[in-house]
Length: 503
Ligand SMILES: Cc1cc2nc3c(=O)[nH]c(=O)nc-3n(C[C@H](O)[C@H](O)[C@H](O)COP(=O)(O)OP(=O)(O)OC[C@H]3O[C@@H](n4cnc5c(N)ncnc54)[C@H](O)[C@@H]3O)c2cc1C
Image (cartoon, rainbow, N blue to C red; front, side, top):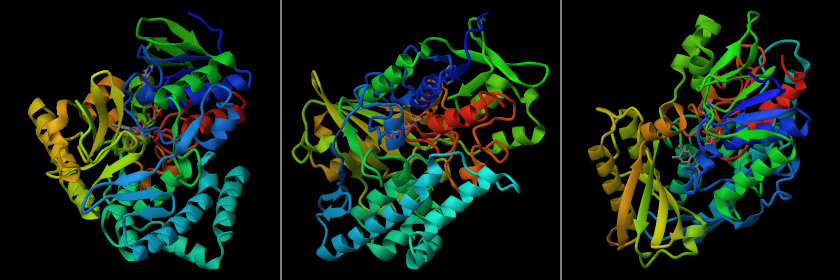
């Protein structure tokens, strides 16, 4: 048994590393315990699941001095939308490959969304407020949000409040019409979630993504020089140079609780016990509370809320090996985000199938890629691929999904299928088995209106503090959710520090 630490972080996903680095920077003696032999969670390893890191939030980048630890961003990342007729290129507010009128409408829409996401941005870098009388900090946070929205001016404020809970389908239909441009926005609003373009709240999820990710602000993403590995390496350096210890192949089996219902340490699967008054968990909410803590430490309502939390993963990952790139796809293209969905209808139809536990006949696809010794390896995301697939996932189902993804790619990039030398599918259930990712869910739990802000991960546990004193949640299951932003880890550590180390 060892007791030399002020804080234990369970899991070395990027959020766990951010939390550890922030705590260590504040002088806490921190140990990070990671199940896997490598660090980084979904961002870790030589072929990371999160192949397109959207960008550690600028506040964390400067707060942890990540530039000093070698993290730099390259040129702004464009989005290439290849489905449908022709090729549309989206570069911030500029859309090429569409009519002049559509490009002008899109520029207006983008600028408007950037303003609205800017008004939300403040909410994402701090603990969400609770709806409770008399808590000054919470009232201030609400007031600041109100002021940010008012600061937009009367017309924008009214418009933002009109559209924020509506759906991205209607917004795009009204402002730019359907097609590959709208499909790219619809993918951004829904990627990773169990929501389709017509689901209410998808304008909010789009604004969230614009506000929380993007090294350049307002959704302007750039590729980190050195890729995912450079992000992980900088976070490890930030944590270690501040004194945090990181132990891999150290799966936590239990969170230890004393007679006063206070978390006091953890037990590893090998029986070793490590004590600290502060525990931050980067594991999913359900895994943290039901598996590691145990329902006996929770009240019946919280157990019910956790069990009802929507956690069905909706994205499968495909690794596609190609001997060479087909004509129509260049090495330069692969530096960008490539969306293959002809229109929003394709995205919505793919969602409709998945909603009922079916594989879509025509999935929507995003991919990126890199050169290998023998050719090219593309990391593709198939949306939607439900974790609760009827009859369960099998090799035959994976083959079917691979076939339909390749057909979509072949339709957009003629000759694509003929270049493929190998394909491997990882279903949401595979991701759950490898990474302890409940339901294989991108955000560790659905990011939709009833599981956002003060409802994330569930009402009563929304400010990173879990129902047991001394225990905090620091992963994507906490506010403001997933993607590679680092915000949940940053905010959770900030909350723990504010609480004085432990509640
Ligand atoms: C298929 C797929 C593709 C994605 N692609 C992208 C992308 O391109 N860009 C992007 O921005 N986002 C992407 N995401 C989303 C992103 O990867 C996640 O939102 C993000 O990884 C969450 O980070 P995290 O640090 O909170 O958790 P994770 O990355 O899930 O890390 C959690 C860590 O905790 C560890 N752990 C769990 N239980 C224990 C335990 N008991 N003991 C010790 N350690 C434990 C795990 O091993 C893991 O290392 C993708 C998600 C999926 C599913």
